[in-house]
Image (cartoon, rainbow, N blue to C red; front, side, top):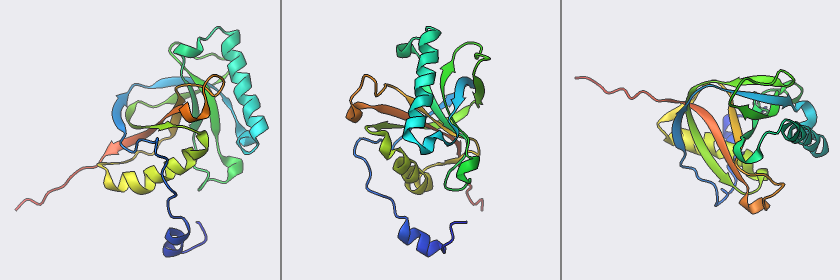
Length: 186
C-alpha cells in the first residue's frame, strides 16, 4: 500500500520526538453512545482558511442556538485514516456533542458506546498527527489493548479563541478492546 518494503518503511517513517506535554498513559473508560450534531469538513481540512470557515459556521450555530461553550464539548471526528483512504474519500466532521435530540439542521453522527483510551494533549494542534502515530506505533504494541474497528475522535477542552496555544487541551478518544491473555494449561 505505501509503495515501500517493511524495512524501508520503518527506516523512513520513524516516530518523531514526543511532545513533553502529551500523556502517553491514557485513562481507559467506558462511554455510552453519544450523538454529535456536526458539519462535514470535506476537503476543507486541506485548506486552513476553508477549515476555519467550517469551524466559524459551527460556532455561529452554537451562538445562534444559545449553546453554552463552557458546558459544551466541541469535537472533530475522522471516520477514515488519510494514510490509507484516498484524501478525496476521507470523511471528516466538526461538531457538538448533544445531550438531547440532535438538531435536524446539521448532520448527526453517533459515537458508539464502548471502551475508550483517552490521551490528553496540551499544546498546539500541529502535533496531534504525530501523537496518533506514537499511540499506534509505541503505545498499542506495549499495552493490554488493541484498537477497535471504529473511529476515534477529539474533544477540545478549551478553544484557541480564548486560550494561548501552549495551553490548548485536547482529549483524543480511541476505541479499544482488551487483549485476551491465553495461558498454557498443562
